[in-house]
Length: 413
Image (cartoon, rainbow, N blue to C red):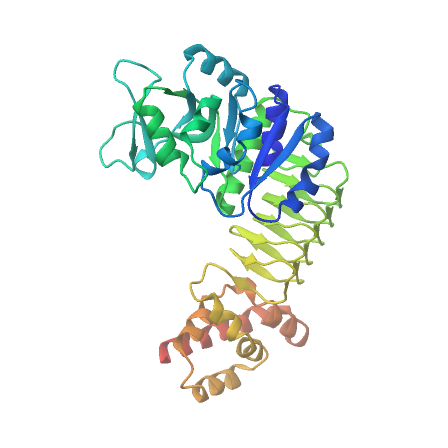
C-alpha cells in the first residue's frame, strides 16, 4: 500500500517523504530504499520512542515538515484510492486556509464519524459527529489531508489525536475545509478489507487500460483484473482470476486455480491447489491439491501441506500446517487439541469407531460437534484408504457410514 502512495506522491511533485514508525524501522528502510532511487525522492523516518497518536508524529517531524511555508500532505498508510494530490493542492490553495480533509461518501454513515459543513458554505467544516443516530450527512474522513505548516504550532510533542484534538481546534477557528474524493476508496487495515481494496484497485487499473495488468488474451487469465510480475512463473492449465496479484519470483504449478488473492514475493503454489480469498505471505508454500479460502492469511515462510484444507485460517510466520484448519470455528483450538483423536478415527472401521466413542464418555461434546461439522471433502485420508481397498464404487458408501456414525455420536453426547 505504501508503494502506491509513494508513486502517487512522486507523480504530484513531492520530493521529501517522512514515515512515522515506532517498530523496527530498519526493516522499512531496507524495503523502501529502491523507491528513493526509482522516483528520485528522499524518504526519512520519524521514529517514535513511545506511541504518539495520529498528531504527535507530525510534531516530531517538524524540522522537515516546517522547513518552509509549503503545505504538506498527511496520509494514513492503510488506505487505497485514486490519490488526487494535484487537484487537492489546487483546491487547498484556492480557499487559502489552514487545512483540507479529503472526504468520501458512504452508504451507512452511522458506522463512522461524519463531517458536517457550515450551512452557508459547501466545503467549510462546521463540526464532527461520531456515529450519528440521526442522519446529519454521509461524508467521512478518508485519511488524507493537506495542511499548512502553521498547524504544527497547534500540536504538542505528546500522544495526541489529530482527529479529536487538532481538527476540532482548527474547525473552531473556521480554518478547515473538505474535499470530495471521486472514485474508489478503502481502508485496508484488515485482511478482508485488504482483499476488497485490491479488487477495487485492479478494477481501477482496468478502467484506465493500465499496462500493469496481464492481458486477458493470455490462456491462463480467467475473468481479467490480473496483475503478474514479469519474474513469476506460471504452470500449464492454470486458471488465474479475477482479481489476482502475483508478486516477484512467485512459482505457480500446473493446474492451479487462483481467484481473489494476493501472492507475495517468493511464494509457491504447487500443482492443482485451489486458492481463493487468501493472502499468501513472502516465501510461503501451498502444497499439492491444497485448498485455501474464506480470507485465509499466511505469514512469512509458512508451509501448507499437500491436500490440506484451510478455511479462514490465520497462520503465523515460519509455521508448517499438516492438518485441516477451520479458522471460522469459535473453538478452533479444540480442533488442534483433538487432532490425534481425529486421525485415529479416520482409520477405524464403523464398528470400532462406535466402540471407541462409547469408551470416551467423559470426552467433551465439542469434539463431536467439530467432527460432525467437517465437510465431505475434508476426509481425504478416508478417501485414500478405502478407494484402493474397496474400489471406487464402495468409497462413497463408506464415507457416508462414517458421517452417520458421527451423527450418532453427536446425538449420544
